Every structure is written in structure tokens, then in C-alpha cells.
Image (cartoon, rainbow, N blue to C red; front, side, top):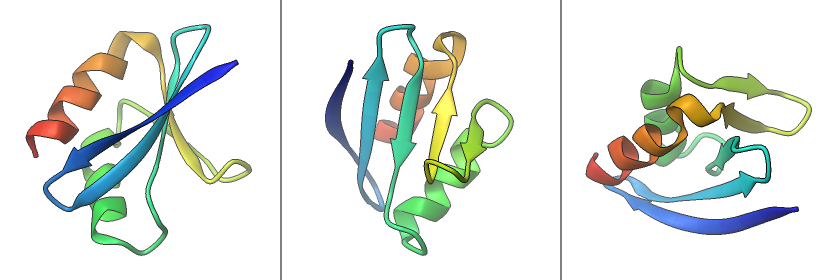
Length: 72
């Protein structure tokens, strides 16, 4: 089961889901400024999964990424 929440960034809201295994997924509307911000912050520490249209981050990076997005 996944818990959903919204975080605020300087470019607008980003939706995240927390999974039981510690992974977190990130989503923003395609082509949006917050989507561009997501790609910039997450690149190299999260994986884009086209099937789900979401970024997935492992537990080792998850909380740091959320903090960086909120501070952006």
C-alpha cells in the first residue's frame, strides 16, 4: 500500500507516494515547470519509469530529495 501526499516547491505542487519498501515516487504534470524541476533535482538519484509516468527513488535518497524539492 502507498501513502500519498503533496509537497510544495517553488514551481508548484509535486505529488509523492511512499511505499512500504521505503521507495518514494514523484509526479508532476507533464510539461509543467514543476516537472522540469523534478527532472533536474532527481536526475542521477531516481529512475524515470515510463510505464507509470513517475520518478522512483530508493530509500537511500528519498528523504533528501523531498527536502531539496521543498527548499527549491
